[in-house]
Length: 113
Image 1 (cartoon, one colour):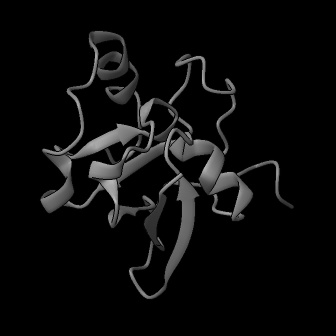
Image 2 (cartoon, rainbow, N blue to C red; image 1 turned 30 degrees about the horizontal axis):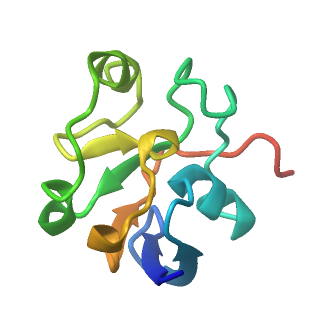
């Protein structure tokens, strides 16, 4: 199975963590495994926006379009932008190798003390 590189850029844009994931992995799960501050309160059920990420503009058009339900959740996300997505709704495929996502400054994982 092909490994996919994902780049997580910190909310202050000063640090980038590059990780390896497998095709079919969920971006939220990959972020949490690598201690990124995405809470995912609803555990990927698309009932919150605590896994909100900002996708690098060059990568955004590679993703399938957000569903209406995801768009509704993004309307509630603090600091949402045109290239915002919910990490729980991104399943990694070969086309996403090198995907770069920025963690919003409003992102705080309350499960990590």
